[in-house]
Amino acid sequence: MTKELDNATETVEDPKADSEKEAAAPEKKSHETVDEWKAENERLGKLLEARNKEEAARRKKLEALELKEQERQEASKTELEKAIERANKAEQRANELRLKDMRRDAAESAGLPKALADRLKGETLEELEADAAIILASLPVKTAPKLDPTNPGGLQTGETEAEKRKRLLI
Image (cartoon, rainbow, N blue to C red; front, side, top):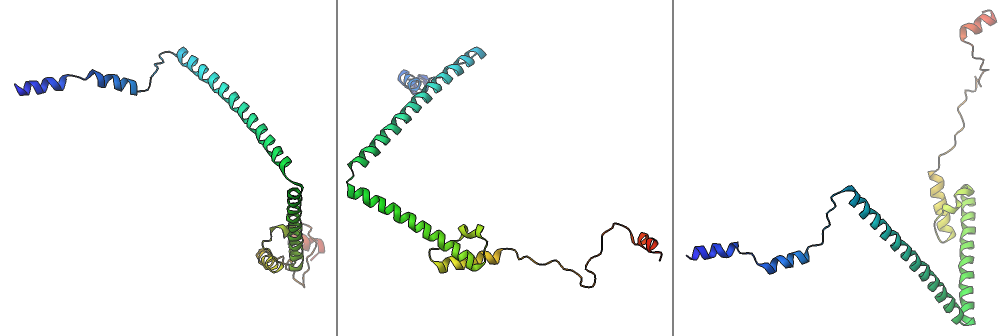
């Protein structure tokens, strides 16, 4: 008899568990026809387009707010802060020009083409010259064409040796 009770309880399903499973499972839509798929696709396309427009509007608003914040910060700076900022920018530009000038000098002293001067790395003239020497060593060396001094090259007429003998009557 206990076996029968055990079997009976195994076959009885808990109605609460079923309702919880249905609530937890995502809602699935069945699309049985092509028209339903097309309609769903069109609806999702419109939704995506609307969201893209909203995002573009938010992005524009954020850019405008960032610009206003930057202007506000600039207006709140004292004259001393503005002068310090200008001096820092001028010093940075002077350093860039000094480094460019040193690169040019290092390339020139090493015999490196001017087009490769911007490729040099280093902070001091010695470092730049060492890098220029490395780059110069890696460039292919131009060699003069080999010419036979006894035969500097005859006229290239395109005639064969037999035609030449016939012409010279040999």
